Image 1: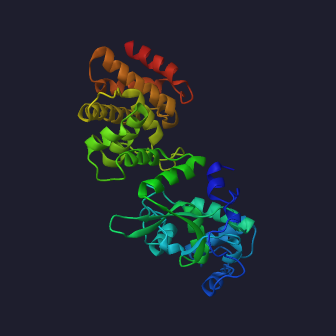
Image 2: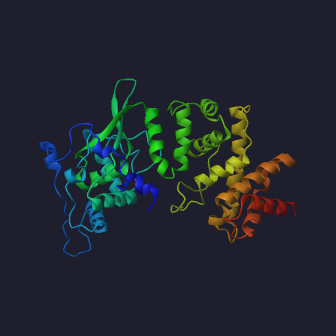
Image 3: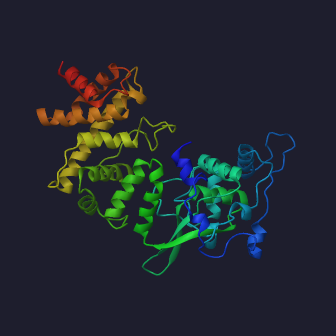
Length: 387
């Protein structure tokens, strides 16, 4: 089982279950809590195929089946032993924006407060169901929901989930968004809360966009409207941070140029992306020259050329028979093309974009090279291009 599910599921107990942050949510619960302490049963449609069930009921039925249960345990049973502040789920910021999935959008409409600390990380229905199934099978949530209480300059306060959003949505899906549950709340600034999200997510592979957003926004004090010069000056302190600046600028802001081909945010590429954002970042890191002395305008000018080259290569790839994104736009292949871009410019002094179609032809002619070492692929590209 993946670490991702372990972190946001029920597989480990980090000790919070034995600590008291307030009244225990158990047998001596209040009237409002007891009202929520009901078991959930999904009626049979009569035909056994679920055609008469709502999307929410269908999701609950999937969780029941995976947990091998006839009905869900009560919410008080699930949350037994938990202490903390008892808060209504809909008062906690969970979703970053309007979800694309209909069921998630339905829940988001009831949980109107929008989350700022998780940046681009979406709440996924598949993971909500997986996590919910684990909780129901164990009949207990071992890890606490962690929430940041953030006060803005005007004195307004928001509660934003820093760890456990998928668990929160699973509980909301089953027992309702107005359910009240105990959560561990800590007073934080917006940047501290974002740091907490990164630490909490170290057990799973965070997306390249999340890492880039965190690096840039942390550097500029969380100011999303910061100018390009400020973002560069405060973020690009090292080559690794310069790469995060590239990803944030190009993919989020379309600056200095947009990518003209689809890029997947995850390694599965199930959304039809030619490559992943991590691979694009690797390409940029290999292609771009960076030094502490470079100005923002100088660096961004080179970044624009790199994006133009990559767009030209991707366009050429699509017209070549035998093109296989899984190999020809894999991580090590992308790094080797980035290195060739940089070397070509250094040796010839010409703009590499004019040889982009030829580079694409050469790479496709190599066949299944996705797992080949980038240095070996680079040498093959350089030799073929010389010939």
